[in-house]
Length: 112
Image (cartoon, rainbow, N blue to C red):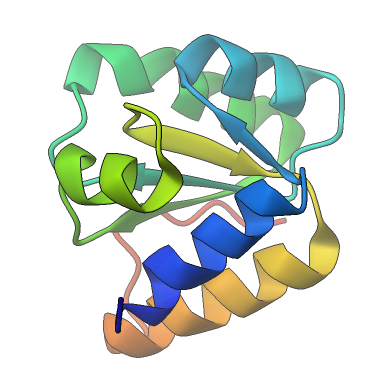
C-alpha cells in the first residue's frame, strides 16, 4: 500500500489507538480521548452529523479524507467510514498528511 494516510491509520489501529465507527467515535470524543476524527468523503451525511456535533462541543479537529469507505475499510480490515484517533502523535502526523494532500484546505476544520 503506497497511501501514507491509510498506512498510518492501519498502524494506528494495530497500536490500539484507533476507534472505528460512528457511535464508538462519539463515545471517544465525549470521554476526552479523541485527538482527531477522520471520515471518508462518501460517509453518510446523516451519520456524520452527531459526530460533528460532539466534536464541535469538545473542540476535536475533524478531517474529511478523499478516500472511499471501501478504501478505508480495506486498510483497517473492518467496514467503516469514520474513525477517532486517540494518540496525540498519530493525530498530529495524520493532520499534517491530510492538510498537505489537500493543499492546506480542510473540508471541516474545528479549531482545537
